[in-house]
Image (tube, rainbow, N blue to C red):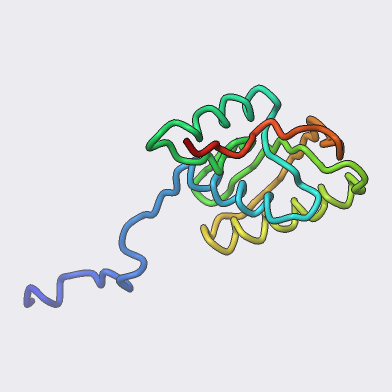
Length: 140
């Protein structure tokens, strides 16, 4: 028997090895997808947004696109919890439905993971006359 005859075929190159996706990757994808929905004013609780606004203004700091999103990622599935602030006057149920659809589509398309649930907590409503918690950075 020759040596080449005793070897098992390795399979397709794309099937050799394993791909893992970090929770933070899924959180960023979901955060960006949720922010794209009309009626979503911000992500996260008031305290998280305040700390995030301060962190965003630190030189060299980066905007936290995953703020307000918590993901639990398994080998083939993921579950997400989102905390959003909606604009006053929008139908919250419609916004939540649109966020859920947009997040599931984006996460499944980009990661190949099955999204088993997207839980949405509406933590606040942005009134038209309220100032933003995240003011524009001032130029000095």
